[in-house]
Image 1 (spheres, rainbow, N blue to C red):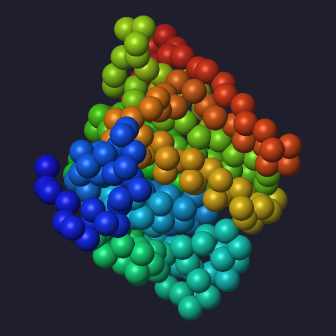
Image 2 (image 1 turned 135 degrees about the horizontal axis):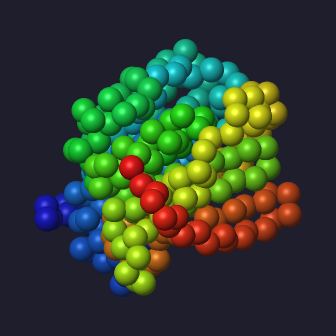
Image 3 (image 1 turned 30 degrees about the vertical axis):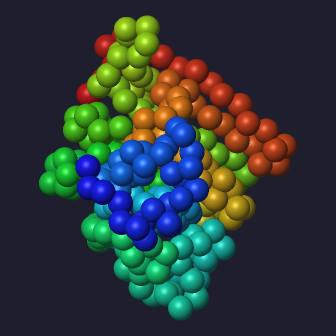
Length: 254
């Protein structure tokens, strides 16, 4: 692995002091290549914390522009970037935060075709999208590419996240579950309103997005127990976290 420079050692000293991370873990972060779907409510804290943590290469997939109504929760952007592509606004913010990070921008929607072209060059996929079509496409693409997936979702005052590695077996020797083991099919169109229709508390995306970045750091450095086979639920109004376990269904998988 590429050695850390003196400036990087100083920058990441609080990581390196952790015996679970150390210099070797920080080097793994430096070598890591992470693709993030969405530079919005969830993507904003994910991108900020991964950049601050020293992830060496971050790919941002988003075809949208920054709008005024985004700023209540999409904190990587600001009033001066309204009208810009979210990929450009986020890349500029990352450059100010950590010049050691390389940003690759993909100004398009994530799809199976896009993943076929680009996902193979990454070690990890993080899905911060806001629609079921993209979530299923991300899960399928990550499974085919044998890339871990961190996926999260939010709505009004609650959120959830999980980690998927269905191409591997768990400690019990059984195959890890897929996204469809958790959500067999998408709900009918219009059943679940978007945040533009129902509203969303801005800080909620910070909570879930930060947890997603923590899962990514665990996967990259090999520390802790990722949320594989576990769905973490957060109710902001009650201040409560719950965990639901789920398993592989017979015949599931891409």
